[in-house]
Image (cartoon, rainbow, N blue to C red; front, top):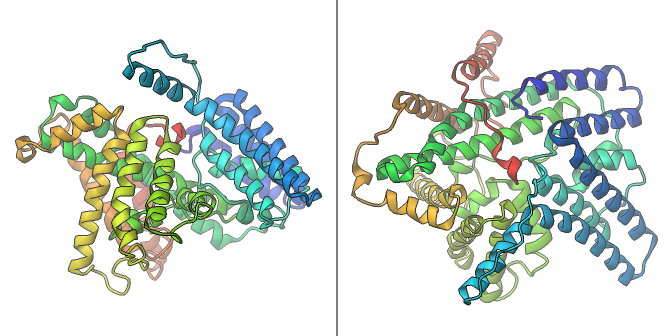
Length: 482
Protein backbone atom coordinates (compact mmCIF):
# COMPACT_ATOMS: atom_id res chain seq x y z
CA UNK A 1 0.00 0.00 0.00
CA UNK A 2 1.37 3.41 -0.95
CA UNK A 3 1.28 6.30 1.50
CA UNK A 4 0.29 8.61 -1.37
CA UNK A 5 -2.82 6.61 -2.31
CA UNK A 6 -6.57 6.65 -1.69
CA UNK A 7 -6.21 3.21 -0.10
CA UNK A 8 -3.95 4.59 2.64
CA UNK A 9 -6.20 7.64 3.09
CA UNK A 10 -8.99 5.20 4.06
CA UNK A 11 -6.79 2.65 5.86
CA UNK A 12 -5.10 5.07 8.29
CA UNK A 13 -8.22 6.69 9.83
CA UNK A 14 -9.91 3.30 10.23
CA UNK A 15 -6.91 1.79 12.05
CA UNK A 16 -6.46 4.99 14.11
CA UNK A 17 -10.09 4.94 15.31
CA UNK A 18 -10.02 1.23 16.14
CA UNK A 19 -6.68 1.66 17.91
CA UNK A 20 -7.65 4.55 20.21
CA UNK A 21 -11.39 4.03 20.66
CA UNK A 22 -11.98 0.25 20.48
CA UNK A 23 -8.81 -1.56 21.58
CA UNK A 24 -7.29 1.11 23.85
CA UNK A 25 -8.28 -0.69 27.08
CA UNK A 26 -6.14 -3.75 26.40
CA UNK A 27 -2.47 -3.55 25.36
CA UNK A 28 -2.35 -7.06 23.90
CA UNK A 29 -5.41 -6.44 21.74
CA UNK A 30 -3.92 -3.11 20.64
CA UNK A 31 -0.73 -4.88 19.59
CA UNK A 32 -2.77 -7.54 17.82
CA UNK A 33 -4.61 -4.82 15.89
CA UNK A 34 -1.28 -3.31 14.82
CA UNK A 35 -0.07 -6.73 13.73
CA UNK A 36 -3.19 -7.39 11.63
CA UNK A 37 -3.10 -3.85 10.20
CA UNK A 38 0.57 -4.25 9.30
CA UNK A 39 -0.06 -7.53 7.51
CA UNK A 40 -2.97 -5.97 5.60
CA UNK A 41 -0.77 -2.98 4.71
CA UNK A 42 2.00 -5.22 3.37
CA UNK A 43 -0.29 -7.86 1.85
CA UNK A 44 -2.06 -5.14 -0.14
CA UNK A 45 0.97 -5.27 -2.44
CA UNK A 46 1.24 -9.07 -2.70
CA UNK A 47 -0.19 -11.27 0.07
CA UNK A 48 2.04 -14.22 -0.92
CA UNK A 49 5.15 -12.52 0.47
CA UNK A 50 3.62 -12.26 3.92
CA UNK A 51 4.94 -15.80 4.38
CA UNK A 52 8.52 -14.44 4.30
CA UNK A 53 7.88 -11.96 7.10
CA UNK A 54 6.03 -14.56 9.16
CA UNK A 55 8.75 -17.18 8.71
CA UNK A 56 11.54 -14.70 9.49
CA UNK A 57 9.64 -13.59 12.60
CA UNK A 58 9.16 -17.19 13.78
CA UNK A 59 12.85 -18.00 13.31
CA UNK A 60 14.11 -14.95 15.18
CA UNK A 61 11.53 -15.27 17.96
CA UNK A 62 12.65 -18.87 18.51
CA UNK A 63 16.35 -17.93 18.21
CA UNK A 64 16.00 -15.23 20.86
CA UNK A 65 14.36 -17.54 23.39
CA UNK A 66 16.78 -20.37 22.62
CA UNK A 67 19.83 -18.11 23.11
CA UNK A 68 18.45 -17.08 26.50
CA UNK A 69 18.15 -20.70 27.61
CA UNK A 70 21.80 -21.62 27.07
CA UNK A 71 25.13 -20.34 28.31
CA UNK A 72 27.05 -22.62 25.97
CA UNK A 73 29.06 -20.33 23.69
CA UNK A 74 29.07 -22.75 20.76
CA UNK A 75 25.28 -23.19 20.90
CA UNK A 76 24.70 -19.46 21.18
CA UNK A 77 26.88 -18.85 18.10
CA UNK A 78 25.09 -21.62 16.22
CA UNK A 79 21.71 -20.08 17.00
CA UNK A 80 22.85 -16.63 15.91
CA UNK A 81 24.31 -18.14 12.74
CA UNK A 82 20.93 -19.74 12.04
CA UNK A 83 19.24 -16.35 12.24
CA UNK A 84 21.84 -14.73 10.00
CA UNK A 85 21.73 -17.52 7.41
CA UNK A 86 17.93 -17.55 7.22
CA UNK A 87 17.58 -13.78 6.91
CA UNK A 88 20.56 -13.13 4.66
CA UNK A 89 19.67 -16.28 2.71
CA UNK A 90 16.22 -14.92 1.83
CA UNK A 91 17.70 -11.54 0.99
CA UNK A 92 20.48 -13.06 -1.10
CA UNK A 93 18.17 -15.32 -3.07
CA UNK A 94 15.50 -12.78 -3.94
CA UNK A 95 17.79 -9.81 -4.45
CA UNK A 96 21.16 -11.11 -5.61
CA UNK A 97 20.78 -14.53 -7.27
CA UNK A 98 20.63 -13.19 -10.83
CA UNK A 99 23.40 -10.66 -10.15
CA UNK A 100 25.86 -13.30 -8.96
CA UNK A 101 24.82 -15.69 -11.71
CA UNK A 102 25.43 -13.11 -14.45
CA UNK A 103 28.66 -11.81 -12.86
CA UNK A 104 29.96 -15.39 -12.66
CA UNK A 105 29.19 -15.89 -16.35
CA UNK A 106 30.83 -12.57 -17.25
CA UNK A 107 33.99 -13.60 -15.41
CA UNK A 108 34.19 -16.83 -17.41
CA UNK A 109 33.56 -14.90 -20.63
CA UNK A 110 36.61 -12.74 -19.91
CA UNK A 111 38.63 -15.95 -19.67
CA UNK A 112 37.34 -17.10 -23.06
CA UNK A 113 34.76 -19.60 -21.78
CA UNK A 114 31.30 -18.23 -22.45
CA UNK A 115 28.10 -19.86 -21.25
CA UNK A 116 24.52 -18.85 -20.61
CA UNK A 117 23.99 -18.08 -16.89
CA UNK A 118 21.04 -19.46 -14.98
CA UNK A 119 18.48 -16.72 -14.48
CA UNK A 120 15.31 -16.88 -12.46
CA UNK A 121 12.24 -14.72 -12.93
CA UNK A 122 12.24 -13.54 -9.31
CA UNK A 123 9.96 -10.84 -7.94
CA UNK A 124 11.78 -8.83 -5.28
CA UNK A 125 9.59 -8.59 -2.15
CA UNK A 126 8.97 -4.97 -1.21
CA UNK A 127 11.01 -3.83 1.79
CA UNK A 128 12.90 -7.11 2.29
CA UNK A 129 16.19 -5.29 2.90
CA UNK A 130 14.57 -3.20 5.62
CA UNK A 131 12.72 -5.78 7.68
CA UNK A 132 15.59 -8.28 7.29
CA UNK A 133 18.01 -5.87 8.96
CA UNK A 134 15.42 -4.97 11.59
CA UNK A 135 14.87 -8.53 12.73
CA UNK A 136 18.60 -9.28 12.51
CA UNK A 137 19.29 -6.45 14.96
CA UNK A 138 17.09 -8.27 17.48
CA UNK A 139 18.98 -11.58 17.24
CA UNK A 140 22.37 -9.88 17.38
CA UNK A 141 21.43 -7.71 20.37
CA UNK A 142 20.04 -10.72 22.26
CA UNK A 143 23.23 -12.65 21.52
CA UNK A 144 25.35 -9.72 22.77
CA UNK A 145 23.13 -9.51 25.89
CA UNK A 146 22.12 -5.96 25.06
CA UNK A 147 18.47 -7.00 25.06
CA UNK A 148 16.42 -9.62 26.84
CA UNK A 149 14.45 -11.79 24.40
CA UNK A 150 10.72 -11.31 24.31
CA UNK A 151 8.26 -14.07 25.22
CA UNK A 152 5.36 -12.17 23.71
CA UNK A 153 4.99 -13.36 20.11
CA UNK A 154 2.34 -10.78 19.20
CA UNK A 155 4.55 -7.89 20.34
CA UNK A 156 7.54 -9.33 18.51
CA UNK A 157 5.67 -10.01 15.28
CA UNK A 158 4.19 -6.49 15.44
CA UNK A 159 7.70 -5.06 15.96
CA UNK A 160 9.02 -6.82 12.85
CA UNK A 161 6.08 -5.79 10.67
CA UNK A 162 5.16 -2.37 12.13
CA UNK A 163 3.42 -0.88 9.10
CA UNK A 164 4.58 2.79 9.12
CA UNK A 165 8.23 1.83 8.55
CA UNK A 166 7.87 -1.72 7.23
CA UNK A 167 8.74 -1.30 3.57
CA UNK A 168 11.22 1.61 3.47
CA UNK A 169 12.41 2.27 7.00
CA UNK A 170 13.69 3.77 9.13
CA UNK A 171 15.40 0.49 10.05
CA UNK A 172 14.50 0.30 13.72
CA UNK A 173 16.56 -1.28 16.47
CA UNK A 174 14.91 -3.82 18.70
CA UNK A 175 16.37 -2.01 21.71
CA UNK A 176 14.35 1.09 20.83
CA UNK A 177 11.11 -0.05 19.21
CA UNK A 178 10.34 -3.45 20.77
CA UNK A 179 10.05 -2.21 24.40
CA UNK A 180 7.45 0.30 23.24
CA UNK A 181 5.11 -2.60 22.46
CA UNK A 182 5.26 -3.63 26.15
CA UNK A 183 4.19 -0.26 27.54
CA UNK A 184 0.65 1.07 27.74
CA UNK A 185 0.23 3.88 25.27
CA UNK A 186 -1.98 6.89 25.88
CA UNK A 187 -3.06 9.41 23.29
CA UNK A 188 -1.02 12.62 23.45
CA UNK A 189 -2.53 15.50 21.53
CA UNK A 190 0.70 17.45 21.11
CA UNK A 191 2.55 14.36 19.92
CA UNK A 192 -0.19 13.57 17.40
CA UNK A 193 -0.22 17.15 16.09
CA UNK A 194 3.55 17.08 15.66
CA UNK A 195 3.19 13.76 13.81
CA UNK A 196 0.60 15.26 11.46
CA UNK A 197 2.88 18.22 10.73
CA UNK A 198 5.77 15.91 9.90
CA UNK A 199 3.48 13.82 7.70
CA UNK A 200 2.33 16.96 5.89
CA UNK A 201 5.90 17.94 5.12
CA UNK A 202 6.67 14.38 4.04
CA UNK A 203 3.76 14.39 1.61
CA UNK A 204 4.94 17.73 0.20
CA UNK A 205 8.45 16.35 -0.38
CA UNK A 206 7.15 13.18 -2.03
CA UNK A 207 4.17 14.38 -4.05
CA UNK A 208 5.38 17.83 -5.07
CA UNK A 209 9.18 17.65 -5.10
CA UNK A 210 10.05 14.00 -5.83
CA UNK A 211 7.24 13.20 -8.26
CA UNK A 212 7.80 16.37 -10.30
CA UNK A 213 11.57 15.93 -10.35
CA UNK A 214 11.06 12.31 -11.47
CA UNK A 215 9.43 13.35 -14.73
CA UNK A 216 12.51 15.29 -15.83
CA UNK A 217 15.14 13.01 -14.30
CA UNK A 218 13.62 9.94 -15.96
CA UNK A 219 13.50 11.65 -19.35
CA UNK A 220 17.04 13.02 -19.22
CA UNK A 221 18.61 9.79 -17.97
CA UNK A 222 16.70 7.66 -20.49
CA UNK A 223 17.47 9.89 -23.48
CA UNK A 224 20.83 11.30 -22.42
CA UNK A 225 22.34 11.10 -25.92
CA UNK A 226 19.84 13.67 -27.15
CA UNK A 227 20.63 16.40 -24.63
CA UNK A 228 23.37 18.97 -24.01
CA UNK A 229 25.72 18.88 -21.07
CA UNK A 230 23.82 21.66 -19.31
CA UNK A 231 20.56 19.72 -19.66
CA UNK A 232 22.16 16.53 -18.34
CA UNK A 233 23.56 18.44 -15.37
CA UNK A 234 20.06 19.71 -14.71
CA UNK A 235 18.84 16.11 -14.90
CA UNK A 236 21.38 15.06 -12.27
CA UNK A 237 20.20 17.90 -10.04
CA UNK A 238 16.58 16.86 -10.51
CA UNK A 239 17.43 13.30 -9.49
CA UNK A 240 19.36 14.62 -6.48
CA UNK A 241 16.20 16.26 -5.18
CA UNK A 242 13.96 13.44 -6.38
CA UNK A 243 15.71 10.84 -4.25
CA UNK A 244 15.85 13.18 -1.26
CA UNK A 245 12.21 14.20 -1.52
CA UNK A 246 11.16 10.60 -2.15
CA UNK A 247 13.09 8.84 0.60
CA UNK A 248 13.14 11.49 3.30
CA UNK A 249 9.49 12.16 2.49
CA UNK A 250 8.68 8.49 3.15
CA UNK A 251 10.63 8.64 6.42
CA UNK A 252 8.75 11.77 7.53
CA UNK A 253 5.40 10.12 6.82
CA UNK A 254 6.50 6.94 8.62
CA UNK A 255 7.77 8.80 11.70
CA UNK A 256 4.69 11.05 11.80
CA UNK A 257 2.32 8.08 11.43
CA UNK A 258 4.12 6.27 14.25
CA UNK A 259 3.56 9.27 16.52
CA UNK A 260 -0.17 9.10 15.82
CA UNK A 261 -0.09 5.65 17.43
CA UNK A 262 2.09 6.67 20.37
CA UNK A 263 5.41 5.34 19.06
CA UNK A 264 8.76 7.07 18.69
CA UNK A 265 10.95 5.74 15.88
CA UNK A 266 14.38 6.99 14.99
CA UNK A 267 15.17 9.96 12.82
CA UNK A 268 16.36 9.02 9.33
CA UNK A 269 17.32 12.35 7.72
CA UNK A 270 18.76 15.53 9.20
CA UNK A 271 18.97 18.01 6.29
CA UNK A 272 21.84 16.20 4.53
CA UNK A 273 22.17 18.68 1.67
CA UNK A 274 23.29 21.34 4.16
CA UNK A 275 26.34 19.23 5.07
CA UNK A 276 29.79 20.81 4.96
CA UNK A 277 31.70 17.58 4.24
CA UNK A 278 30.96 14.01 3.23
CA UNK A 279 31.37 12.68 6.76
CA UNK A 280 28.66 15.05 7.94
CA UNK A 281 26.51 14.05 4.95
CA UNK A 282 26.63 10.41 6.02
CA UNK A 283 25.68 11.32 9.58
CA UNK A 284 22.61 13.03 8.15
CA UNK A 285 21.57 10.76 5.23
CA UNK A 286 19.69 7.47 5.84
CA UNK A 287 20.81 7.57 9.46
CA UNK A 288 19.19 4.25 10.37
CA UNK A 289 21.18 2.35 7.73
CA UNK A 290 24.53 4.09 8.26
CA UNK A 291 24.35 3.58 12.03
CA UNK A 292 23.26 -0.06 11.51
CA UNK A 293 26.34 -0.76 9.41
CA UNK A 294 28.49 1.17 11.87
CA UNK A 295 27.32 -0.85 14.88
CA UNK A 296 26.97 -4.30 13.32
CA UNK A 297 29.71 -4.28 10.66
CA UNK A 298 32.21 -1.43 11.00
CA UNK A 299 32.87 -1.62 14.75
CA UNK A 300 33.09 -5.46 14.83
CA UNK A 301 35.69 -5.19 12.03
CA UNK A 302 37.78 -2.96 14.26
CA UNK A 303 36.38 0.41 13.22
CA UNK A 304 39.04 3.11 13.12
CA UNK A 305 41.02 1.76 16.08
CA UNK A 306 43.77 0.06 14.06
CA UNK A 307 46.44 1.34 11.73
CA UNK A 308 46.03 3.16 8.46
CA UNK A 309 45.49 -0.01 6.43
CA UNK A 310 42.71 -1.20 8.73
CA UNK A 311 41.00 2.20 8.58
CA UNK A 312 41.12 2.22 4.78
CA UNK A 313 39.96 -1.39 4.54
CA UNK A 314 37.05 -0.97 6.96
CA UNK A 315 35.94 2.26 5.32
CA UNK A 316 35.80 0.66 1.88
CA UNK A 317 34.03 -2.41 3.24
CA UNK A 318 31.33 -0.38 4.95
CA UNK A 319 30.65 1.87 1.94
CA UNK A 320 30.79 -0.90 -0.67
CA UNK A 321 28.50 -3.13 1.41
CA UNK A 322 26.16 -0.19 1.88
CA UNK A 323 26.12 0.33 -1.88
CA UNK A 324 25.48 -3.35 -2.50
CA UNK A 325 22.63 -3.30 0.03
CA UNK A 326 20.85 -0.85 -2.25
CA UNK A 327 20.74 -3.12 -5.25
CA UNK A 328 22.20 -5.92 -7.33
CA UNK A 329 24.06 -3.75 -9.81
CA UNK A 330 27.68 -2.67 -10.17
CA UNK A 331 26.47 0.95 -10.25
CA UNK A 332 25.52 0.75 -6.57
CA UNK A 333 28.90 -0.73 -5.70
CA UNK A 334 30.60 2.08 -7.64
CA UNK A 335 28.43 4.62 -5.81
CA UNK A 336 29.51 3.16 -2.47
CA UNK A 337 33.18 3.03 -3.47
CA UNK A 338 33.08 6.64 -4.70
CA UNK A 339 31.68 7.77 -1.36
CA UNK A 340 34.46 5.83 0.39
CA UNK A 341 37.01 7.75 -1.69
CA UNK A 342 35.30 11.00 -0.69
CA UNK A 343 35.33 9.98 2.98
CA UNK A 344 38.88 8.62 3.34
CA UNK A 345 40.81 11.94 3.36
CA UNK A 346 38.62 13.20 6.20
CA UNK A 347 39.17 9.99 8.17
CA UNK A 348 42.94 9.87 7.63
CA UNK A 349 43.32 13.55 8.50
CA UNK A 350 41.04 13.06 11.52
CA UNK A 351 38.60 15.63 10.16
CA UNK A 352 35.62 13.28 9.91
CA UNK A 353 34.02 14.76 13.03
CA UNK A 354 34.86 18.39 12.33
CA UNK A 355 31.24 19.35 11.66
CA UNK A 356 28.98 17.97 14.36
CA UNK A 357 26.74 20.95 15.06
CA UNK A 358 24.13 22.02 12.53
CA UNK A 359 25.45 24.53 9.99
CA UNK A 360 25.17 28.19 11.02
CA UNK A 361 24.07 26.97 14.43
CA UNK A 362 23.77 30.36 16.15
CA UNK A 363 23.14 32.58 13.13
CA UNK A 364 20.87 32.71 10.11
CA UNK A 365 23.40 32.74 7.28
CA UNK A 366 26.39 30.39 6.97
CA UNK A 367 29.92 31.74 6.97
CA UNK A 368 31.79 31.88 3.67
CA UNK A 369 33.77 28.78 4.67
CA UNK A 370 30.59 26.89 5.53
CA UNK A 371 28.98 27.92 2.24
CA UNK A 372 31.98 26.70 0.25
CA UNK A 373 31.98 23.43 2.20
CA UNK A 374 28.28 22.91 1.47
CA UNK A 375 28.76 23.71 -2.23
CA UNK A 376 31.65 21.25 -2.63
CA UNK A 377 29.90 18.50 -0.67
CA UNK A 378 26.68 18.96 -2.63
CA UNK A 379 28.58 18.86 -5.95
CA UNK A 380 30.35 15.62 -5.00
CA UNK A 381 27.03 14.13 -3.93
CA UNK A 382 25.36 15.04 -7.24
CA UNK A 383 28.17 13.32 -9.13
CA UNK A 384 27.83 10.18 -7.01
CA UNK A 385 24.04 10.10 -7.53
CA UNK A 386 24.61 9.67 -11.27
CA UNK A 387 26.04 6.20 -10.59
CA UNK A 388 23.12 5.45 -8.26
CA UNK A 389 20.56 6.40 -10.91
CA UNK A 390 22.29 4.92 -13.99
CA UNK A 391 21.19 1.54 -15.31
CA UNK A 392 24.76 0.34 -15.92
CA UNK A 393 28.35 1.47 -15.51
CA UNK A 394 28.48 2.32 -19.22
CA UNK A 395 25.36 4.43 -18.84
CA UNK A 396 26.90 6.28 -15.87
CA UNK A 397 30.19 7.07 -17.62
CA UNK A 398 28.42 8.09 -20.83
CA UNK A 399 26.09 10.38 -18.89
CA UNK A 400 29.02 12.03 -17.10
CA UNK A 401 30.92 12.39 -20.39
CA UNK A 402 27.81 14.02 -21.84
CA UNK A 403 27.92 16.64 -19.10
CA UNK A 404 31.59 17.57 -19.28
CA UNK A 405 31.96 18.93 -22.79
CA UNK A 406 31.49 22.30 -24.48
CA UNK A 407 27.69 21.90 -24.43
CA UNK A 408 27.79 22.28 -20.65
CA UNK A 409 27.76 26.02 -21.30
CA UNK A 410 24.76 25.97 -23.65
CA UNK A 411 21.31 26.97 -22.52
CA UNK A 412 19.35 23.81 -21.55
CA UNK A 413 16.86 22.84 -24.26
CA UNK A 414 14.07 20.35 -23.62
CA UNK A 415 10.29 20.01 -23.58
CA UNK A 416 8.15 21.31 -20.70
CA UNK A 417 10.64 23.97 -19.66
CA UNK A 418 7.89 25.89 -17.87
CA UNK A 419 7.17 22.83 -15.75
CA UNK A 420 10.87 22.48 -14.98
CA UNK A 421 11.05 26.14 -13.91
CA UNK A 422 8.07 25.63 -11.58
CA UNK A 423 9.78 22.59 -10.10
CA UNK A 424 12.98 24.57 -9.50
CA UNK A 425 10.97 27.26 -7.69
CA UNK A 426 9.35 24.56 -5.53
CA UNK A 427 12.80 23.12 -4.74
CA UNK A 428 13.93 26.58 -3.62
CA UNK A 429 10.83 26.77 -1.42
CA UNK A 430 11.74 23.36 0.07
CA UNK A 431 15.30 24.50 0.79
CA UNK A 432 14.08 27.77 2.34
CA UNK A 433 11.68 26.05 4.73
CA UNK A 434 14.22 23.39 5.68
CA UNK A 435 16.94 25.99 6.21
CA UNK A 436 14.65 27.91 8.56
CA UNK A 437 13.82 24.73 10.50
CA UNK A 438 17.20 23.00 10.28
CA UNK A 439 17.69 22.98 14.07
CA UNK A 440 14.61 20.82 14.60
CA UNK A 441 13.82 17.22 13.74
CA UNK A 442 11.53 18.40 10.94
CA UNK A 443 11.09 21.96 9.62
CA UNK A 444 7.45 22.38 10.67
CA UNK A 445 8.15 21.40 14.29
CA UNK A 446 8.48 25.00 15.48
CA UNK A 447 8.10 27.04 12.29
CA UNK A 448 5.36 29.58 12.99
CA UNK A 449 5.17 28.40 16.61
CA UNK A 450 5.14 32.00 17.88
CA UNK A 451 2.66 33.17 15.26
CA UNK A 452 -0.99 33.76 15.99
CA UNK A 453 -3.11 30.72 15.23
CA UNK A 454 -4.75 32.07 12.02
CA UNK A 455 -1.32 32.74 10.46
CA UNK A 456 0.05 29.37 11.56
CA UNK A 457 -2.93 27.53 10.13
CA UNK A 458 -2.69 29.61 6.96
CA UNK A 459 0.83 28.21 6.51
CA UNK A 460 -0.39 24.62 6.92
CA UNK A 461 -3.28 25.15 4.51
CA UNK A 462 -0.85 26.84 2.12
CA UNK A 463 1.27 23.67 2.03
CA UNK A 464 -1.87 21.58 1.45
CA UNK A 465 -2.80 23.86 -1.46
CA UNK A 466 0.71 23.49 -2.89
CA UNK A 467 0.35 19.70 -2.70
CA UNK A 468 -3.04 19.75 -4.44
CA UNK A 469 -1.96 22.33 -7.04
CA UNK A 470 1.48 21.02 -7.97
CA UNK A 471 1.25 17.28 -7.39
CA UNK A 472 3.37 15.37 -9.87
CA UNK A 473 2.36 12.18 -11.62
CA UNK A 474 2.19 9.46 -8.94
CA UNK A 475 5.44 7.52 -8.67
CA UNK A 476 6.25 4.48 -6.56
CA UNK A 477 8.69 5.24 -3.75
CA UNK A 478 12.24 4.68 -5.00
CA UNK A 479 13.33 2.68 -1.97
CA UNK A 480 10.55 0.12 -2.43
CA UNK A 481 12.94 -1.61 -4.84
CA UNK A 482 15.49 -2.08 -2.06
